[in-house]
Length: 184
Image (cartoon, rainbow, N blue to C red; front, top):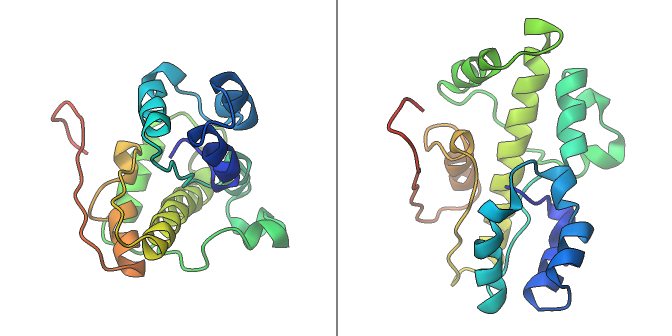
């Protein structure tokens, strides 16, 4: 989840050893696109590099997600930007609206409930983009296995990435959530 698809060449270059860590962080714009401490992921990325395991950028550009959220939907995107988001987006999955509404209400938002439509669209685009990237990679590499590192809300089997992948590609999936046992 931490890398957009547009960073794929940088990820490839890091894994194959063409980029050192400093240049990788700069070229991937890690600190601009992902606000979490790099040290939380550093060992995973280094393991992938040492073992020549592909790291796949799954996400959409953060600026596009922000635009969809702030403007209330995809109509704010340019024709070129619209071409980069999945055409097939499902906002009607069971309990999806309710779950996203709960998440939305947990955070202060300028504009209040009027911003919910954009928030819902942005969340769906995130999940659909990551599902599309996962299915695309697995279609091209059916003998591989993929470990997806994404936030709790993106991995729920009822209405997040997993059923969106299944809609695109029938494949076995397992979900592991590290949590405190509280509600999801």
